[in-house]
Amino acid sequence: MKPDLKSEAFDRLKDKYLDALDPDERAAIEVATGEMGNMSEAVKLGWLRMRTKEHWTKQRFSRTVSRAIEKIRRMVESGSVES
Image (tube, rainbow, N blue to C red; front, top):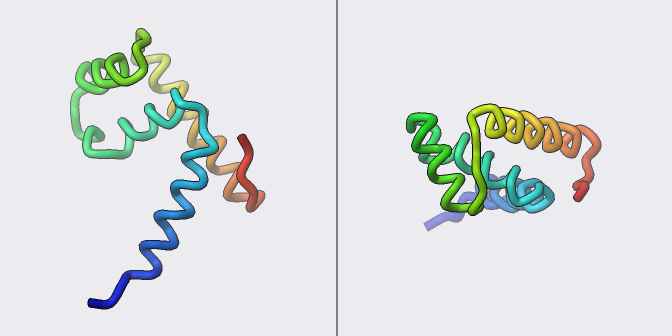
């Protein structure tokens, strides 16, 4: 079996950028892009509440995802990871 080196490299790179995000941002990105991406907003917000033990609104979720994506975009453009 031949390893998929491109996939492995992407996974490491992805983890590097995700690790640089705040815990709230990581959780929001996980919900927005993972298996829950097709779930209703109520399910996503409920999962976030269970995961972070904090209250989440649709507005907070949207802002957090936008902030995290912008932060990742800046890191990719600059070629460095910020904390």
